Amino acid sequence: EAQVTQNPRYLITVTGKKLTVTCSQNMNHEYMSWYRQDPGLGLRQIYYSMNVEVTDKGDVPEGYKVSRKEKRNFPLILESPSPNQTSLYFCASSVTGGGTEAFFGQGTRLTVV
Amino acid sequence: AQKITQTQPGMFVQEKEAVTLDCTYDTSDQSYGLFWYKQPSSGEMIFLIYQGSYDEQNATEGRYSLNFQKARKSANLVISASQLGDSAMYFCAMREGTPYNNNDMRFGAGTRLTVKP
Image (cartoon, rainbow over all chains, first blue to last red; front, side):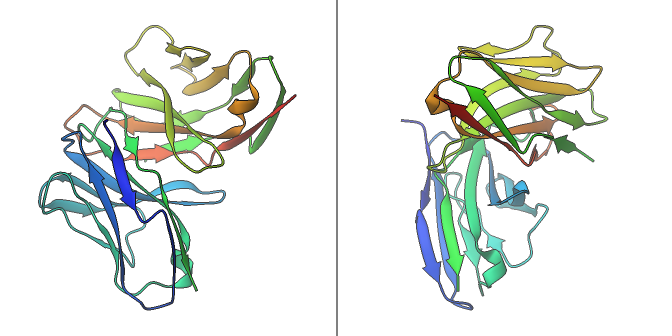
């Protein structure tokens, strides 16, 4: 089954404790991205990757890191989480970066206390 | 810069009736794609329908249709014969460019639809 898999689905952590949210897709998509969703703001892009070893900042990259060592995986790293990073996070992938549908993971609800 | 506007924070519709969710967009590109996603209370993002900027006919997928008015830059979602399971958040999104452009998918703030029995 074609899918984007994120883990974990839910996470509660404390300020400053490094965490990683994993994302994996099995569709051989070149383009992957991370979004955060906050009430009233829709989804905002954090980082994206056009292909392996190619990553770039989206609209709200501060406080986040990503890597793309393999085509299928695109982890999101929070080196020192803060309460303002409490949000619902989505990983998405698509065949390419323009004009094509994005497939979303199930979402990760992160709470930083 | 791209911009997506959904002016209806919340909408109510009676079961079995049709409802239109509004979306306007702003772009200077000639080539772009318009998308609608549904987000139920469980949180996942479900792709509903796609309209390409060069498509002459409005897209349809089952009970969903996209009323595309290019000159007005609007891409309204029409849901016919609403069902209780249609209660969810709906997001309009746009992606500019050809397949090999590096373009982000931009989202509106969403419309929460509630279907009343």
